[in-house]
Length: 207
Ligand code: PRP
Ligand code: URA
Image (cartoon, rainbow, N blue to C red):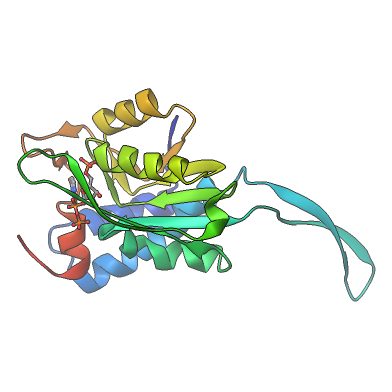
């Protein structure tokens, strides 16, 4: 299942982050802002428990989050979304999976993984701005499942039909939330129109 977060405020920011003339400082700020909005939607079904709170006036029946949340950025571009989600759920724990897409084969190569123990049975949110072929996301989902994740949600900024199809085929239990579902991949497996190389644009590097 892929859900598009089509809110006008998100779409406005998306128009700016896509722009080739947006520099790395503004790109980073926008990645944080957009992530917060997408995660707000992506977390709408997480488990809560009833609590009673004493207000200055009376007792109120309230709900609090009732699951261990583990945010997992895919290095390196996923780090650009970390601040946004932690503003929303500051008590979340953070695990890391280091993957890069081999320039030739386009296949994901894992070079790092480190997860908190709460991943077992917890709710994991994978963050990566670009879900292109879907290879990196599928590899990250497999790592989380091997480590006992209870449920997994994927949050990206831009994706495309090819990437969604792969994740749905391999892991139909994992929903994807995105601010854009673009047209296609090009010959280099970049999303079209996309926003270019997210890692380079976030961190001010170039190929
Ligand atoms: C980008 C992006 C994803 C991956 C998407 O990372 O951040 O992780 O490509 O491609 P896929 O869906 O086809 O696997 P990249 O490999 O450029 O590494 P970086 O984050 O270190 O720049
Ligand atoms: N990785 C990126 O950063 N951008 C794309 O369009 C595809 C993969």
